[in-house]
Image (cartoon, one colour):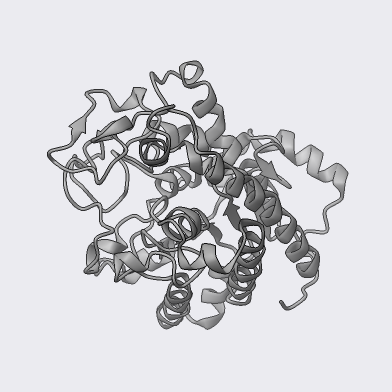
Length: 372
């Protein structure tokens, strides 16, 4: 990764001062038409897979039941997802899927969402979905986007827009649930112990993030995995009798997340700046999973939409069980949080302390960057 000089030149005292100033900065002060780019999997896909022939789609009811239009959009949510809610905090319109024909002209200035449900760090993750945009292809599309942007506003302005943009990347969960632990004695589980597999993932993820940096990304929110063993799908399939979180997947998440944070620290040292921000999705989810009633949920084990034990078996479809009030369910479907749960998660992005965000939260980032 190319080494750069720190643009901010911030002392530790300045970090503390701006932390307290962050909450007083208005959206107009925080961002000046700041672009937003999204990479990753179904937690952040807002419709790219609608344009693909794949089984990993959320383009049928009841998906989108609480979206402003009341119609499915390709988001794996009853309503808004994490990127939508971050865009709200930026005071910006939601980014369009990169494959959308609507993404042209001035809409390019808002940014783009390259995420695709089913993908992981590894190219063989999600193979059962046949046709998805693996992360390497997402980065190719990012290069293509920059060419289109340069044609619109000029190369120098395009580079400035990309360098000053906020980036979100969410990968890793599928490499466990849709690869290593997908079936007993999977190819990857026969190739690696779980400890060695995590190390392999981290090495491959570092290559992805380094490439993202070399493509111009300078503020990158990187989420770890949530409590993988506690989603309704894994409880329903693996722990239906006990209703407890699956210990193997929980172990995988606990191995992966600290290793990811350590790798991000190394990348930041190479860059000479706080380029990569670690978002501890495990702790963000675990708050309402371990004590759902404290956050106004009636359950964190049963999905709102689904069938079978814990509504965790199969897809959410028009014939699935459907809860009448999505706001009291932590999980919308077998794998994905409800909109209300996503709002709790994004609130931790914005104002969470170092338990959730390292080395700083998004409010602090926006305050610092507004002063550069």
